[in-house]
Image 1 (cartoon, rainbow, N blue to C red):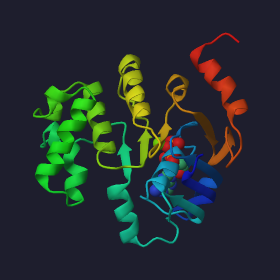
Image 2: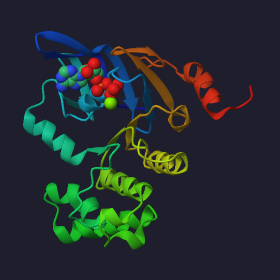
Image 3: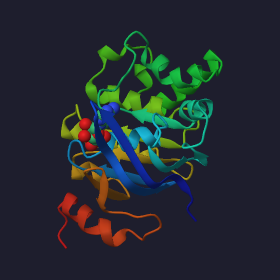
Image 4: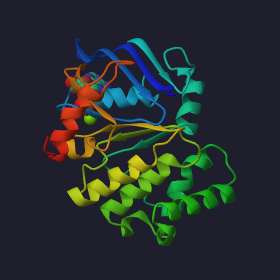
Length: 248
Ligand SMILES: Nc1ncnc2c1ncn2[C@@H]1O[C@H](COP(=O)(O)OP(=O)(O)O)[C@@H](O)[C@H]1O
Ligand SMILES: [Mg+2]
């Protein structure tokens, strides 16, 4: 049995800049279930980051409905949206966004501290999580002492600490070579489970192949890959085959 973690219903996001209207997203329907990792691909400017910002409660739609973990973001108060971001959503960016003046452990513990968890408890949870992600010996270092791959692993640790149910990653491998990139995506994939789902924006079909399915954006519209409640194997099959180079 699956249940919806993220639901976009006929979502449009329009920006006005200098008198003109930019339709960043138009009529987008998307559902991500608990336990599912969905990859989003599409050319630059196709609306991928707009989509993640909406799913991450950082933005609200111009029209349509976005529901995350049962919270309707179109009608939620700013406080409710902030709480959702603090407790339930983890974000991973291309450039890691670690705080350079905090240690690795402090960076990972930060979301809990911001949510008023006692520092000692937050630190203990961060230590345990770092150990689970193969970074046990790195907790006391500062981020600039780590490699790019390690920094992105720390960013993933920070995005999943606590009881986060939605992980959103915007080209998290952008600054990494392909071996480290693959490691980071594998780690991201491993965080998805019965109580957690995710959206991965990527340019690279090899990384998208780690997702359960891929949706394609073009000019703000989903042009292939998914619709709510549609059985998707037939749509994603050829894509993953292509991505992994598997013979058919
Ligand atoms: N705050 C904004 N104001 C005006 N236009 C924006 C804004 N954010 C994004 N856009 C436009 O929306 C479109 C989609 O942007 P984005 O979601 O960043 O694309 P992607 O992440 O796929 O490269 C682009 O044409 C971009 O210029
Ligand atoms: Mg983008």
